[in-house]
Image (tube, rainbow, N blue to C red; front, side, top):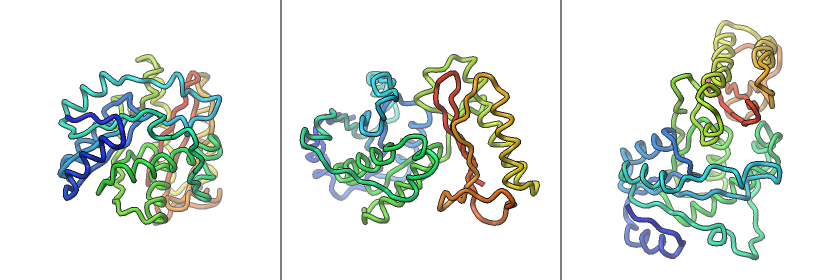
Length: 280
């Protein structure tokens, strides 16, 4: 497994593999089985697999956990080596953002909803760094987890609108035995917390069942919010039932039809922010 710490070092490797089919997984480290499932998927479909580890300060607001974000580089590298990753790209912040860096990439529609409301500037940081990394890595395929469904939809739009010659592949959410979606931030939770926090996924499953039984969106939301807000460990950030393409909220009197719908939520569980979704 090759480790590259500079853009020029990686470009030298990329130029010597110019005809290879490259699969790419961008990460912020603190790797778990969800990340590693993307590696497995890439290795099945691509000649070479590249993983980047870069904690992108640009997508953290001043009151978020950039400094405390889990960093487990040594363990991450061992996991990637065990999964026979070809190259790991580990740039510093100064390598990605020069001192006079002044260009941001903003998505103006999808990013204004859900996570974009709760975390202003988050998606600007994501689309900017992903664009830079796509230009550096030049992958054929890029793999992202469906847990961050809004991010996946926005990155697909980014690739379409900016004419990147990359196929973005969404891969299913990997979960703990309890049903809790795997996340790097789960490291902040105790084993008991992880079990208790599975109420988030249980709530989304309830929503799926209610909609499939022809309940209205409005009544479904009321039941889901009640289930979450009755738990003293939980502070609800948002709960959404939205169109799976536009992320527009469905009207309260609507019942499930043939369109794709995403039920998603963000909660603070003992002050740890968790997100999850179900795609119907």
